[in-house]
Length: 246
Image 1 (cartoon, one colour):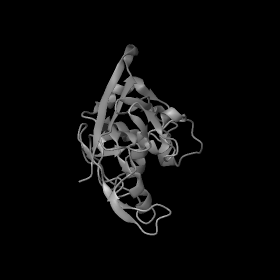
Image 2 (cartoon, rainbow, N blue to C red):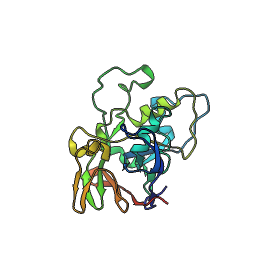
Image 3 (spheres, one colour):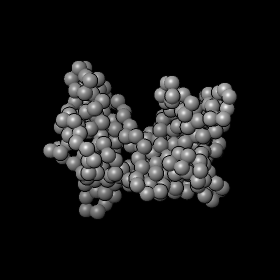
Image 4 (spheres, one colour):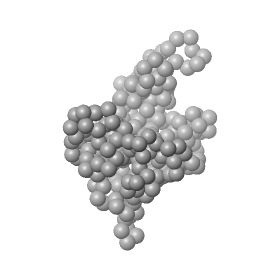
């Protein structure tokens, strides 16, 4: 859903370790994930993988993405099912797509590999696949984190190659997310789960402490990238306000 759309607090099953049985109700550990979304412009044929070198032939641009997450629901359902209801209730994206052509000055090499990728993911001879995107995460107007996209281990081109290596096809308008953007320092973590260390270390905000989101909280992701001649390429923002469960 587009930036500015309210996010209704999701309900689902949750079970704390000390509980005898699961209970049903609104999530009490509502979180965000600061991500970047990549948008497909040109489709691919079913059964034909998209190699690393064809990434620019298919991906049109990128946007900011907030992958809202109900951590308590996710934790309970994750063991037998994987994340489902803990993720499926809302995903917010910025109101426009920034074309990859506008981000040529922001291209950077990904971090040094700690292992040798399999051949279909080996980008040693490809053009730099990372992007220097400077992201800010604000809760109620207060910046709590600045995750650097340049530290992401896997590039968007590698993600695309992996998603299609089994022959899965692309369609125009398809969107895929980067996963949570988090850097090595405390102020570079891209979710409240990481920022508060799973609720152990609450955030100090002007309007009170937070471990996870409360009703009425407004989360805003914004970003920019370096452009030619020192200018900044703005990537807009994606914002959402938490409203109570019905």
